[in-house]
Length: 298
Image 1 (cartoon, rainbow, N blue to C red):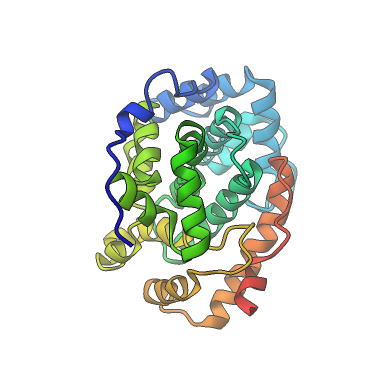
Image 2: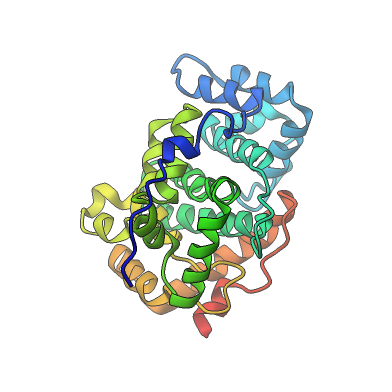
């Protein structure tokens, strides 16, 4: 099928009136994260000034994600034990989660997108740790934020995305490839632009922008393992998909990246499913109806 490139400019789609503002607490934490001369006491201040965020952070630190044997009672203790990077990344996603609008677009469900993002983030972090990638917490945040531009794109370009969504369902292709055909850019470019406009760290911008480029990343070797973990996570099935159309591509990429077999992948999926089941209620999300291991068995 031949498609004429649309002339819609990404910069015009994401003009200043469209972009939501991040909460002050998230901005303050991001600014602190760019400095080397601050410690837990400084990071604790903007969190403690936001009671909702403080409660979420304490729930996060006391979840199975970290597996502490005793309850952590204070923000500063949390920062000391798990590090400012993990807390800042969680606060960042919590902030994005709160400001991205629900486009009310056909069958699209915003909570399903966040379910997918959470599961992919947990997978990217666990795989990154297995591969001993530096800063696996950044992989968690990068995978969480990789699809954050989709609701905005659906809201701003509903008629064009109706066509893309229908083609994705009918042709079984990736949304990013269809976007490239129509616009000359995809939602990874859009999310990276959004991250840049929010002055997010350059590491996040890179992870987000490259998440649709799995083949190129796998060819770059160990230097690109972190980005490859996030890109591989993007091939996981969506919670609303009946069939996993990208399973073969995912499994081949997983084996190439980790030198592991199907049994080890099944074990990893079990871990991801277990963590997702505990983590989802923390973020007021339903637990996915179908497990990753269930897709693998089918």
